[in-house]
Length: 165
Image 1 (cartoon, one colour):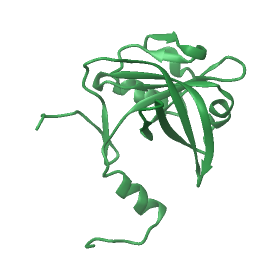
Image 2: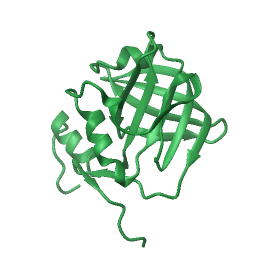
Image 3: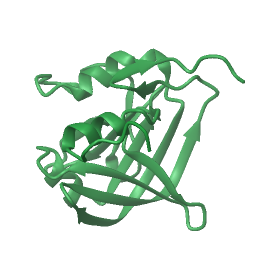
Image 4: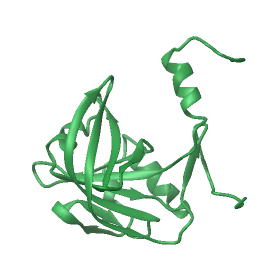
């Protein structure tokens, strides 16, 4: 294949960035009942029957323990107008990530964001180490969706959906 390079973490990250994804805020509550959330694009459908989804989190993440011990999590799929929330939750310097947005308590008390293009409220069924990440699999217990254009991420930048082909 033309353009093939050695597989380094930087080269792999760059090549993976060629795959356009949606942007999510994944949320849970920790053992003390505090809300925890982060921006992720590592979300995917896994199974329709039973209804399963998966996402992954770096093992070095400060949020890992909260997700490992939480029985539930929510995948809040961001609409294009929620780019500010994506940046807020991606920042390690934001003291109150939940200080913006309209939040309610979902199943298991997990934070659910209003105005998303989709929300999946899940019961965690599996967490397994895979390389430098942990894969979380959740059974979808409740979902909601809206006909809103999603926020996209490609090549290290946010994008709008664009023209339908």
